[in-house]
Amino acid sequence: MMKAVIDRFEAEFAVLILEEAERRLNVPRKLLPKHVKEGQWLQVEILGDQVLNVTLDDQETELARQRIADKLAALRRGDHLK
Image (cartoon, rainbow, N blue to C red; front, side, top):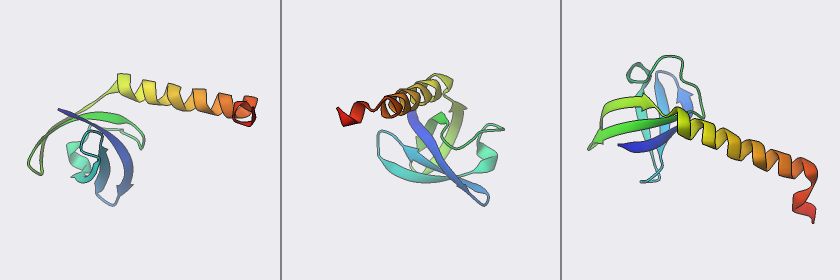
């Protein structure tokens, strides 16, 4: 299993960025869980270029949201100007 983030949607495909391999993968939307959104993290099982299984990774998605919120808060406080 690899971690991947949904970068964007293009027509009937989702463009995933695979964390470990740092590569992009186009996956048919029908293989993804319903109601997924850009920025959500997934656990992806791949064999070659074939996607075998995709599940939501709610924990990694929440960690990413928290990292972004922390960075925005630091920018608003002006931490980068010190």
